[in-house]
Length: 99
Image: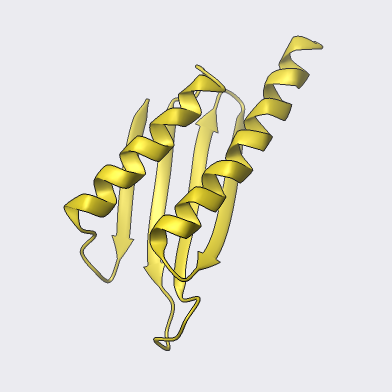
């Protein structure tokens, strides 16, 4: 599974990138069909609370699951996105079984 991290208009720290790799790689447990995951990080202007925007999309054969979240911290938003994707992947897997 390829993981691509894109920080828009800032440099993501090593620590943040490691956190993303660790969290996103857990998605493989829910579907071994994931080919590529794209993570985009953005700081929403103006600089206020709840200004860290994360979008994670996972490419599956013939499908894509996606989650967007805005939070106080990137870590919090990434956690929330991974939870959303976990549910979507579980549903996707269930549909695959029924076909």
